Amino acid sequence: MKRFSRFAYIENESHALEAEIKGSEVHPAIVGMVYVYELPQGFYLQADIEGLPESRVFGLHIHDGLVCAPTGPNNPFSDSGGHLNNCGEGIWCSRHPYHAGDLPPLFSNEKGKSSIRVYIDRANIDEISGKPIVIHGLPDDFKTQPSGNSGVRIACGILKKKI
Image (cartoon, rainbow, N blue to C red):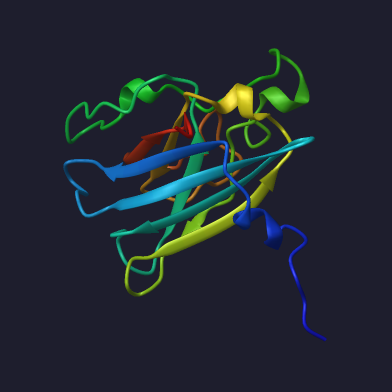
């Protein structure tokens, strides 16, 4: 029996947000696009990235800052803030890995390419619009507070409304 994704149709629709991903000065080959499609109770995110280090796993998060400025080789994109957290302190969803900005990991293939499609119901388009989406050099361990021990930020892009 052939299986179909219930979200397969959505990529034929017009996306609400997009981000152009660019690598840090240490990883200038990283490039890609992220598209976000609005759904009634969340959003569908599509990311296609290339130029990643080959055959590795990376953390992927939406952050709560407003910029993706390169801030040097030792701590690139530090102005992108922490993980987007739209819950009040002390609520279960205010802890990692339940932040609205916590996304599944990226897996690169032997050519440094990665692709992900995911439905997120912990935030809506308005809450993520204008926010950075960040690729980290290590996979998220889904337990270390507050960032999942996902390492240095190696690429970033701002989720902007489609023009």
